[in-house]
Length: 254
Image (cartoon, rainbow, N blue to C red):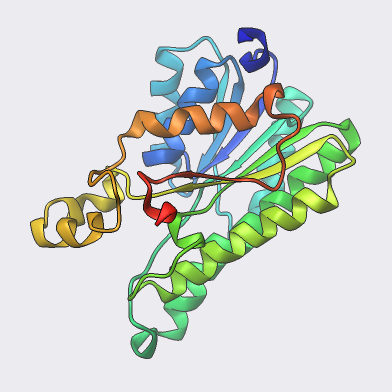
């Protein structure tokens, strides 16, 4: 069974990988043997992440500046991966953003900013990578949604709309690519103890209110995202496509 989770010789692209869950998932893929091409908007931050991942893994790690809202930046990111490694086996669309606001207070610019990263970014990356995967007859597309892909939450209108779109794009990709050797699946994390949630974690009342949604009544720990991404990236998941794996402490089981 261990051979089925062995990613040696495979090439994985991970967006938004300079910190948080993106970096954690990239590290897990490297530990399973995959070579990495990781990207984020900050050239310095992604280079630092690559160095840290490389310190404890033999996998090759290529760090690139990437703006997923810019189709040319995405095209360059994918092209660089193919030029360096000759193929793309795995794509993890993790880059995301969130601007909280109730519906009546949402500014157009904020709405557009969330959709550009969370929706357009996933679209650009899927389209660019899928072309190479189709030609190769193999691929694993893993889109990172959210518990809020599946349930609503006040004050998160822009984010829930975008993450709902990510889930539907994943399902449609799964159907469209079903006979090409490519699978498409969605991981939907709940609240994790990441840097982006520091303000909430430091606010006892906000934490209590958020975790009231989570039957396990705690934050997810970083390592708890690893199994899902390695499984979906592996050959062992060959008959799994269009699926949602919720890593959310039971939030969406209610």
